[in-house]
Image (tube, rainbow, N blue to C red; front, side):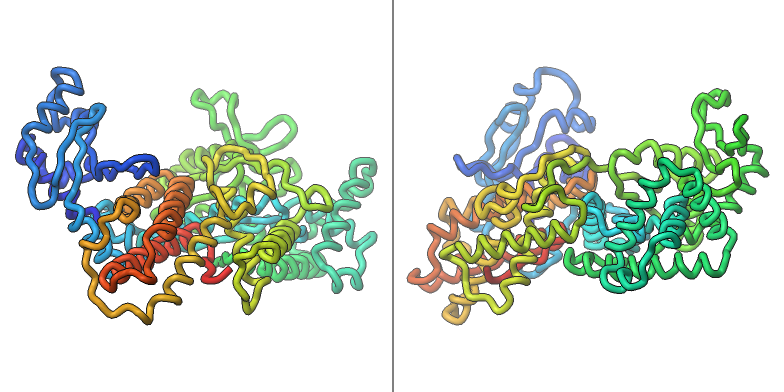
Length: 578
């Protein structure tokens, strides 16, 4: 991979600057490929050398770059050195470039990009990722799609980097809403409807009782009584709640299977109702629990101790709150897993909640709070099916599959498939994921079916189509190749552009590992697919001389391997035919 080139350039700089080679290696970066013009391969920014005290400040940056470049020499690895805008640019031996990249992809396989010196000091450990977290007894809302796919991506990435990852689905399975649902089910629940379409019926009951509660004190009191019984461990009430929870998880599992998502642990607020009481006792012992005039229990988070900023943790009737149970869950997970990092993936509207959670843990004296991180994301707007506004994720997945089936049926290039519905499902899910991951996670975005499912452009469909086409080429040509790989036959501009792009895969993964933004990987894979499409049109395998055919075949095979690895990290299952 790029280590040979980075190390060679860094070693030259080390001799001139007197800085250790290891310190300079991260400053040698691969140059992003441009479709419009050929680029050099690596660059070093003079500003980065100044910032890390590798160069003493003095004359302007451009003159420093020129002076430094004149002290560097070409050799067997570097064939050209040029001065850019505040940078020193390097072109490497083209034959060596082809040999090193192709050898690394062949040898490392799915570890290509991960098994890199850029991750040499990466701290591996026990990582908890909490994501998805729907509310039980409700159908899986489309709004939970983002938490599910973002959390899955983060877990995939952390695992690929060598961490021991535990994926937790922390269900919303406790709280006053179950008082409402329980009271509602006792009034107009139907066992028959529950058997036919369980979550839909529970959802309908909840909507109806919620509507009634706004105008009825009796309903509100019934809900409070039901939840009080639930917290008190009443056998009949608990039995009803356990049934609703079990039904919900069974239904959610079907959705997760379609998304290619799994969990190591189904947790929930219910597990921490008793531990929440322990938290309240601990806060009281530490003198941190305060009472308002209304009798609500709070913890003072203000810097001056004047209750100007506080967190509510217990209702005046003594029942626990969401925040209390989250504190109990965090403490319990540290005891159980001794985690090195815990990541919560939720929408940005919960930022205040997590600020309060982390502040409370700090106030309680838990110094491991710094290992906890909230990854917030923005909202999706305008997600509709042909029937109207989307409420449930199942509708979104069905719509994506249906539209892809129609698009595939209308396309002249679609191959005969054993299971077209399965292919359409995987391509549809890829389209949803890429649409979601193209921008910064914190940004809201407008959903557009036509844009999402385009076969050309920055879409998941384009990535799947490119991968399928490269797999088709492998099936068609693999048996005809007999000669050894010769890098001299990968010197065409289209081949060099692909090799240059493949070279910087580890840098992209390193960037993603630092800020957990999938957009870097998405942009990389889209460019990889574009370059592969250009090369596929011009670098023919069939009909070429044996050595040239072998070299091109292996280039396309390596490209499809990296494309598949990147897609899998994002949570996409690559298709081999479409």
